[in-house]
Length: 243
Image 1 (tube, helix red, strand yellow):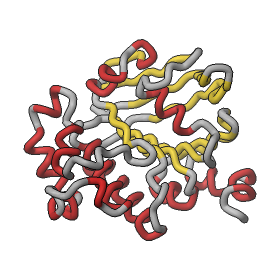
Image 2 (cartoon, one colour):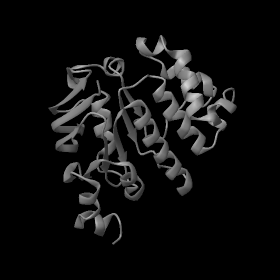
Image 3 (tube, helix red, strand yellow):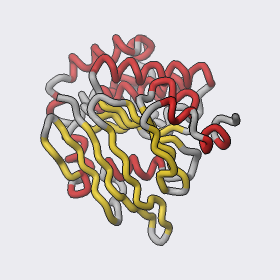
Image 4 (cartoon, one colour):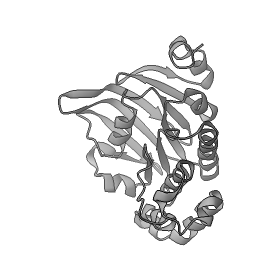
């Protein structure tokens, strides 16, 4: 069974600085939903709230995993990962002095994934042949595009049901952004994943989205029920697409 996430009226802050205000979004089973917005509007904070890295000051975050409901706000990050929720963080956050293969192995954290580590490693190398070629290379010596492949591969080693991808375009040349976005779609379709992607590159994100939300100053400014609605929204056309 596919999995889903419901975020209901979430507020979050860093000390006295309020970052998210009454954020409500849902990601239905086997969807790709994009959270669109420029830097500093709360996209990464929302991802961290889902993963238990930042605790919401109010609201609920529920995940349905194989038909079972889980309140993520009551769980530790380790417990959330154990459910099969994987995050590809902004900036990739690799271990630069470990090899490609060692970084991938660290992704197989939860017990279910450990039992499938050989199978999942083969699947990663099939999906990203460049990683197979460079399995003994230190992650820190790789190009930005290769590091993004490795970050995605590490998330796949978790055998996830829900994939969170935070700003995959950051630091990449345009051609590599396009390839990375295409690869996220390929993985979603092949593995029947539920995907929430935070991205500021609207044009690329909308290529693979089923629908999405626009976040401005920590609030949801617009919810589009389709890509057409997002493309035709005056706010997006004026401030984000330059039309």
